[in-house]
Image (tube, rainbow, N blue to C red):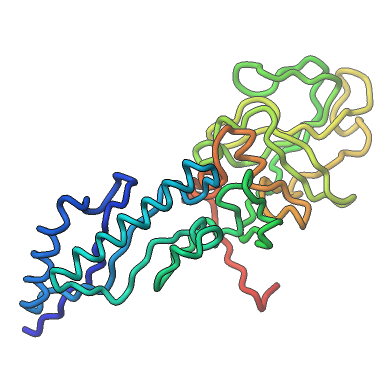
Length: 284
């Protein structure tokens, strides 16, 4: 049977301690690679690594990045000594692409940048970087009704209606990857017939849904929703959790801030129950 050599990218651990060979182990690995290469079993296409603090402009962050580069260079030298000469060297992810041109080598790996988000909004925001959010998360309201003043919303009664209130229900929850830490305050914008209505999550995020505050309702206590004046939104109106702030959506950064995490976690943990809808440039 015809055999094809395996195409290999050898990883050097340059100080992140995750995957990859340490410099101490590399001579032995390089030797094994060389032998497998000589036997036609593998083709060493690439050598690569990953930086742990390329998004950190502090002096120790910069020092860390310099150290990663130095160890990477040393690793390449050890490989070359053993006769292993990768065609493609790659080290930079989005932070390296943006902030460390010296780490670009032959190829770069855009990750969070492909979402149109900043690797660290405290260093530079997406807007300052000139990137636009590529992902929008939205869902249609499944219920709009009036609750009375003092009525609690969701588990644990962590929020009570400050007045007679319109409440909307959004069919997404922690079972879909919406962080429970987004309870009570994460921003949501509803697209209504009267325009965009900015609001926030009230009460705890449930497994499959959460509630939003749609503002004060008219009418006397105990009267039905239908007799409480014009509703601010209707069932089927779209609630936008995050997307492009330029289009009036909350940003993934705002969600991250509220939940005490980073934008990466907001956009990558969405569950498979959420339908994906891909839009291409020519359709826009």
